[in-house]
Length: 65
Image (cartoon, rainbow, N blue to C red; front, side, top):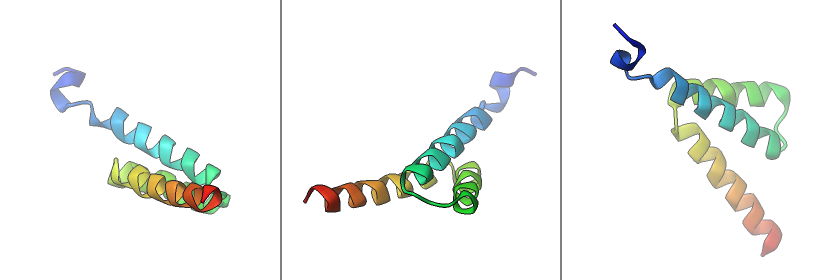
């Protein structure tokens, strides 16, 4: 069986985890909270970056309002 047989979802989850950790860094979270966001990205997939994106957008909206 090849890698494509299993769907290759591991790479997508890893990407979500890295994006989550990066956005947590931009939001000013500490290292432990960044790790939690990374693990949340691994477990929740695209839901975690969506949550962080909304928090980041809300923060930027408050700055530019």
